[in-house]
Image 1 (tube, protein in one colour):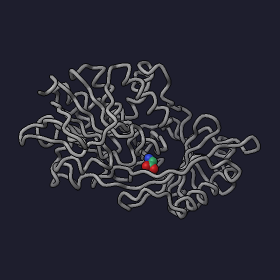
Image 2 (tube, protein in one colour):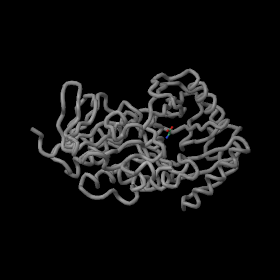
Image 3 (cartoon, protein in one colour):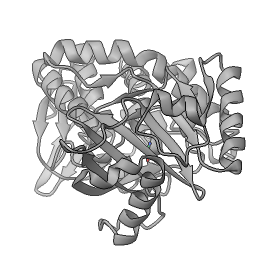
Image 4 (cartoon, helix red, strand yellow):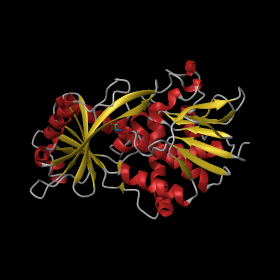
Length: 379
Ligand code: GLY
């Protein structure tokens, strides 16, 4: 017999964990079960953690950008609510971002980004190479120009995952360390999720399994694909030049690179991007490119300790918008396909999915990302 009003959330990355926490906090279900064989081990663990809607959107992706901006506006309140329930901070960093340019083409890109930012009413300051180096002395002599973007924030992804786990526990979320094979339905509504040894019955199921979501139900098949990314985690040593205090972004030989500060003199350097299926290996060539590119921007990094290399899979969609809300059989809700922007979009996703779980329509700002948008409506 089905437990009355059980909500199963599949996937304990940042998005799934945040939805489970919010659902339990708002009591939108009698029981909230978060199912993941290894919570916090996917793309959320490998993320850079930039909360940067404009610099992460491709030019022309207005809806991606608007959704990101809506989410950034929600982030401080989201961070505070999670921290309060968790009894620990989520690692929100407010030092801002500098985007830097190394050659003439990069400078032209920088000016385009500045134009976008200003058109969006965002604070932005165009700086000479010397001025941006004054701001961040770790920047090297190859940097010719910069853009200070004080309200593009960042979050420590692992601090966020730990806080979400504690916040969910505090609100009574039940965690099942199991693999979900697929969502099951009776042709009209969902009835549960199939595990390796049977079915966990549920009245509603949220699929928040990132790049792995497409295999969980036919309505999601081919709508989410893995986009592999590799990162480095490095630490300034006692003898090293201090790391930047702001997030630093650049394009080197056309390849985007970023360094996002963490506590303890650490930086997350990312990220490669490949369409390589679920290839889990960190490639030597990927590490070589990241090291070469970041060293052009932050030359002192050669003396840092290389603490970790990691790879994971961004959940990509055809139009770079996530899939949010009801889709397919009654009771099935998608919260996946966040691409490069999972950390940024978690705040707007939580609010949108919570509204749907309360029985309301998807909020206006999330409508372009409606999971049931038709293929015809997609570019
Ligand atoms: N948002 C950073 C990345 O996907 O690499």
